[in-house]
Amino acid sequence: MNHLVQISQVKTVPQDIRFVNPWILWILWKNRNKMLFEGESAWTNKIVDKAFDDGHQWWVAQSGGIQLNKMQTTKTNCWINPKLRELKCNIGYAWSRKKALSGAAWVVRDSYGKVLLHSHRAYTQVPSLFDAKVKSWEWALESMK
Image 1 (tube, rainbow, N blue to C red):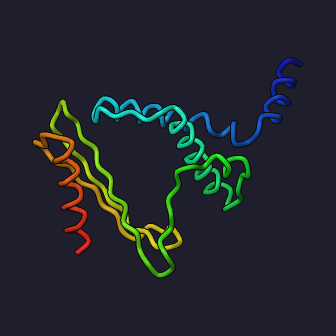
Image 2: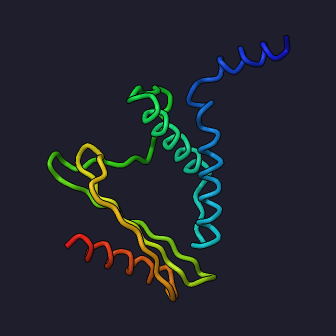
């Protein structure tokens, strides 16, 4: 009987809260790595916002585009589409002070958010975070040619 009560209680928890838990753990793990390798850390509210955003994107992908209203209101930092018939390139990087390694990635999307091109690579003997940033930008710009 106790088991039935627990199941009915789960149904009263809002759907966005039920699906955000794995994403919070994932974002915490990523934030831990960012703090260890880059010496940077995100604020707690940004971690939770990112978890809700990622959970929302996962839910939309799984449900065929059905939106969850509560999750939409918690989104603060979201990807902004370029103008119609234009493309947008996002560039990312990571750097490990301990190993002097750097990673870079870029992605090109259309105005609907569809990924058209993407790539990633690694660098060795990168002495600073600044050098990691410069290498990632140089490589991404060269790739865009």
